[in-house]
Image 1 (cartoon, helix red, strand yellow):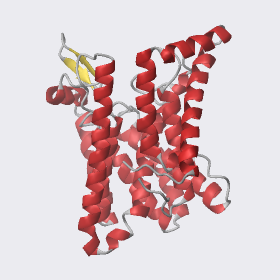
Image 2 (cartoon, helix red, strand yellow; image 1 turned 30 degrees about the horizontal axis):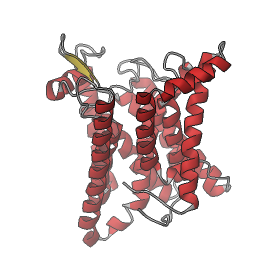
Image 3 (spheres, rainbow, N blue to C red; image 1 turned 120 degrees about the vertical axis):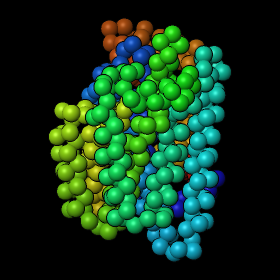
Length: 355
């Protein structure tokens, strides 16, 4: 626990915090049967606003490394200690994700424990991109980004199908980790995990784009960043007809498209918060991001398992019987506001929980 916040760029914390708030909003509707379409992920191929949230979080993680790790890594003597600290933090995030899944497995008596998950993916991306930030130059980082995208694209383009369960990503995860996946059919022996191993190549590429964008932001290269955003958006659109946007597979077109949108969001936040001094909305969530996500996830699991969540949603549905989607959204908004209050209290007392 740190009792004082470190010096940091307000726009990055604000954007991270708004992203965490969006995570809580879309992850916790009152009733999954009644959700406004933009607040749902695309079923498979496709893109909705919700599909931007997780890549934006990983992108911001990469941006943060450009400010927290890169300046200190200039000193070769500091790199070993920086690397150890980085890997220890990644390990703590990984363990937190594993324990969260233990809780879910126990509360809901699931048929199998799930190995992979959101926090596990964050830990992997932070570890890999953090080591690149510490030990490599920007040209090497560009090269790694190219290898990841081209290699992963070649794998997917060479596949017989990209359909659910049968695509090479799902087949590889099933062969390596079944039945410990998000979905697994013991009869067909087919499985899938949206945060599995192979699709992490795309997630690492997204985080690496954040690192590169963060370095350009530190250098004040805003025009170059805007140009890069346009190139990424155009590249994603050009690639989409052959490799569709797909959050489950984290396809290269999805990396490019969400990377472009993330850079635009970063530039907008930088201009409004850092340049024009607008209020840094979301900052309180941003400085306690992982703790807020983990704490809210534990709370949601307990509320759902106890029946309290269903009771709350049922009460709102009685008030709004003709608008079930709105009632469901109000449950989610209320949940976000509860955790916004928690984040406000922590920040007011200058308590910053670091996993």
